[in-house]
Length: 257
Image: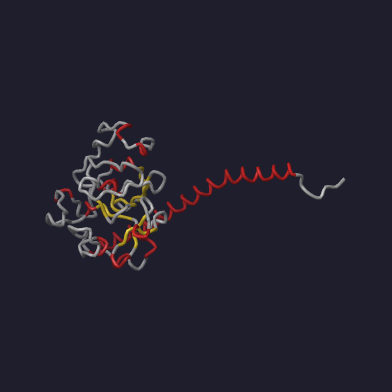
C-alpha cells in the first residue's frame, strides 16, 4: 500500500537530523565569519603600511612628534598629521569586528572611537614611535624611549599599528593586563597595555610591525614585543621574567603563552 505522508515518528527523526546538522554547521559558519573578518582586518593593516610608508617618504623617515593630550585634532597627533593619507579610504579605519562607536553603545573589544572629522577608528598607534622632541610631546614619558624613525634595528618585533580601544598607547613592561575581558580602562600612565590587550580575534589582535609585516599576536605575547627602545621583552609578565599561570587574570589563564 502506497503511503502519501510521513508518519509522526519519521517527521520527528527528520527534525532531529536537521537540528543536529544545524548544531554542527552554525558554529562552523560563525568561525568562518570571524576568520573572514580577521582577514579583512589584516588587509586593512596592509593598506595602513602603505599610508605609513608614504608619510615616511614625505618626512625623511621620521614620525610626527606626538602631543600631550588625547585630542586627535592636534596637528602633532598621528590621526591628524596623517589625515590626508587615509581620509579618502574610510574602509581601512575600522576592523570589521569593531565598528560600533563607544558613544552609541559600542563595547570593548568590539567598539570604535571617533577621530578627526568624526572618522570612526578601531586601530591605534604604538605611541612610542613618535618623534617626541620635548617632555610635552613625550606625554611625561622618558624621552629616550621613543623610536622616532621608520628604519630601526629589530623592526620586525616593534609594533606600529594594531587593534586598539583608543587612538594610541605607550605600554611599559610592568603594565598589568585587564582584570576582566572587556575592561574599559587604560588611561593611566601605567595601564596602557590594556588598550591593546583585546579579545578581538580569538584571544589575539592583528598587528602591523615597523618592518611592514603583519601578524596575529596572542594577547600574552604583547608583553614580549619591543614597544619602546628600553622595553624589557623578558619582563615580569613573561615566562622568562617569572610570571606564573595564576598571576594572570582568570579570563587569560588558559590562553597560549
